[in-house]
Length: 290
Image 1 (cartoon, helix red, strand yellow):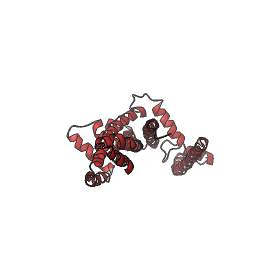
Image 2 (image 1 turned 180 degrees about the vertical axis):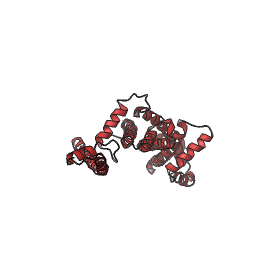
Image 3 (image 1 turned 90 degrees about the horizontal axis):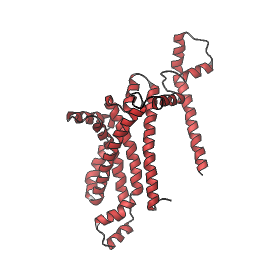
Image 4 (image 1 turned 90 degrees about the vertical axis):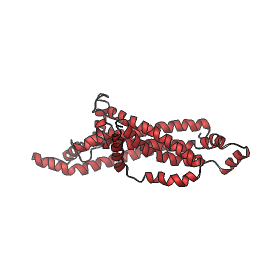
């Protein structure tokens, strides 16, 4: 089964890369024709045309090997302390993401505990919690940054606040579901044992919510990173992967944009992967997973 899964994943990845090469060649074709026309070249072959369209300095869509080359240059061949390094900017984004994620997780779990403990809060709070996520983050982020700046709160704090704003919602919803996951018969048994609400929560609801907890944390971590990147686009002078995206768009450096996108995706995947590993180990220790 693992061999079949690996084969299926490899096949899909290769198909995506092949489609990417084809799309890059097609999208860059018009730019390459213009480049040949400006240079007065007419003696090029189809092979030359395709090769040149896949190696343009500022293509509409960079080819996979261009993105990989840019990532290598900005991650491994550039000093981590340099402001051109994706490691430097990735560290800034990671700091904002982790702070926002921890705040969002604490808020989300706290709200979930209140909602489960006092059912009337669900009717009064959940509509507002859901409504808070209907405001587009791209419109809300500048408002948060400007408001916090008025109170001399700058740097990491405004971006962490936006990351927390995006991450708390999936954690709240997931943990409410998790705390309510025990079977009614189990809750009746706890009442039969004359367990207090606190004992029921600690001995039954909290352990039963473990799978929901780690699933919610994965979504929350990814959402926090998205919030941090959006905030960096709003206020780019402090650096971060979002700032690299904005700089690339200013100067038409599409290869730089795609490299920053892949760096952000890798960072998000790493966070989700770490939470997944911790989750599997915890569930295995609790006997909830093989």
